Length: 212
Image (cartoon, rainbow, N blue to C red; front, side, top):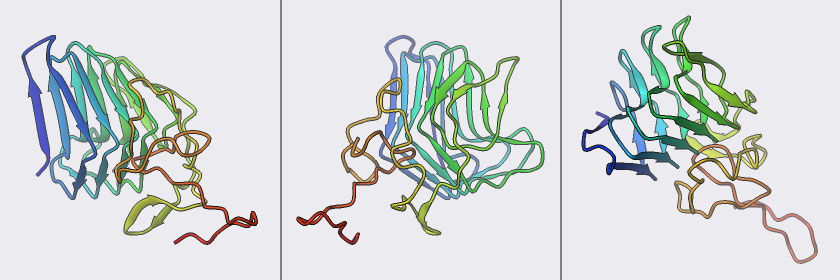
């Protein structure tokens, strides 16, 4: 069972979801809906969710902006053509940056991202659709294999193309730490997804040390 957050208190309502692991949720992992001042979804892991007729991550604002930044969504199953992994809807502006969507199970004709009043950059995703006459405006999208550590671990391998491939000054910020609590940013730029890969340590003589 996922989390549904509905707000109706107006301009003073702020919703923040950060450093959370959503594992094997059915009928959507997280839904944020209503009239808010600002929403933030950052540095979270969504894994093996099943969206039964909707989106695994739904962000809909009738007023203020929602920032969706540096999340990893891995292995989500979408069951209907109109379903999607991430849905950003409503009158409020949705910013979507540095997110990693991978290993999605989609029916023919469905897309990983459904957007309206949505913009962002430096995401890893393969497909997107517009909604209600609007289309997502995304820059520098990446389609390369994400390079996870292994089949059961959504952290990044040392040679992952997601490393240092994010946008470090994303709207709303990337946060001080990743899902593990490791500091952001540790390389030339923030990593894409919920986990930040620390630079490989160097030995005193300059040779690269073996990763633990």
